[in-house]
Amino acid sequence: MPPLRVLYIIDGLGSGGAQRQLVTLIRAADRDIIAPEVAYYRDRRHFVPELAAEGVPVHPIIAGGGRDPRTLVRIARLIRANDYDLIHTYLARPGILARLATFTGGPPVILSERSVSLGKTAWVRITENLLAGRAAGMIVNAEAIREHVEEAAPAWRGRITLVPNGVATVEPTDEERQSAARFRSEHVKDGNGLLFVSIARLADAKDPHMLLDALAALPDELRRRVSVVWVGACREAAFGESVRRRVGELGLRDTITFRDPVRDVRPLYLAADAVLLTSAWEGFPNVVLEALSLARPVIATAVGDVASLVRHEATGLLAQPGDACLFAERIEAFARMDEDARSAMGARGRDLVRAEYSPQALFERTLAVYRRVLAARAA
Image (cartoon, rainbow, N blue to C red; front, side, top):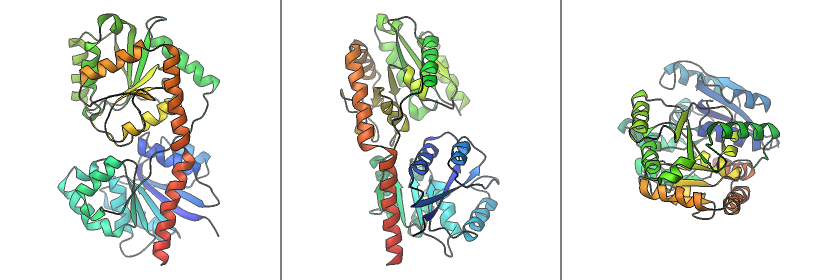
C-alpha cells in the first residue's frame, strides 16, 4: 500500500514546544508508512530548514493570521487540491480552521491540543463544543490537558488519546561540548560553583518571582556559589521589568542572569549542573524531557505531568508550585549531593527517556491513533 498522505497544520514554525514535537514526530515517521506535508500561516520559520532537510513539503499560507478569512480559504484550497488521507492539526486555532475547511467534506481531522487555551474565552469554549463532532479524535500530551479539555468542552469526553512527547537521546558532539564549556565559564563563579539553567518564556505562568524568592532564601554561603541563567523570550515588557526590578530589590544581580532565546539549547543543558522549572502550570514540558535526555537532573514544581518525568530523588527533585521555601530547600539538597550522586540522578533520567519517551514511541503511538481513525472511517 502507498504511504498515508498526512497534512499537518500548525500556526507557525517558530521555536515553540508544539513545533518541536511536530518536527520530532515527522523525523521519526517511517516514510513507507507516512508521507508528511506541513502547512503554517504565521511567518515564523525556525523549523523550516529542518523540514526541508527531511524532504518534507512545506506550504506557507501567509495571510493575516488565524483570524484572517484568507487563511481559511487558502487552507481549504490546499486540502481540495490534494488527496490527503488525514489532517493532523497542532494547537486550538489550526484545529478550528481545519474543521471549517473540511465542513462540506474531506479527510478526517485529528487535533493535537497541548495547552489550556480552550478555556481562555467563552467564544473558544462554545466553538469547540460545537465543532467537536467535526473531528475524528484528539491527541493530548498530558493527563492534565485531557482533564482541562474535557472540562472546557464536554463534547470531547471519552474521545481523547494521551500520547506523551518524545525526544531523541543523541550523544553530544565535540562542538556542543565546547560550546557548553564556554557557556559555563561565562557564568560559574569558581571551581566550586554550581550552574542552574531555566529555559522558559519570561511570563507569569512560569513563575520567575517564585524562583527569585527561593534564591533569596538560600543560605548566604550557598547563594555565593550559585549562578542561575534564565533563557527565554519576554513578550510582556511590564512583566519583564517587574522581574528585573525584583532582582535588584532582593540583591540577586550576581546570582541570576536573563538571556534571550537561542537556536540550539543543547549546550545550555550540557553546561548546567541541573535544570530548573518553576512553573505554576504545565502540561508535559519539553524542557524537562530534553534535560533528562542529556542526563541532566531537574528541580521542578510538581505541576501537570511533570512528576511522571521528574521522579523525586531518582531523576530530580520536586517542590510544590508557589512554595519558594521548599524550592530553596531542593536547591540546597542538590548542592549537598556529591558528584557521583548527581551523575547517577542524571543517568536515571536519560534511561527513563530512552525507555518510555523516544521519538519512535511517539511515532508508534500516533500511528495507532491514525489507524484507529481510518478503520472507523472505513467501517
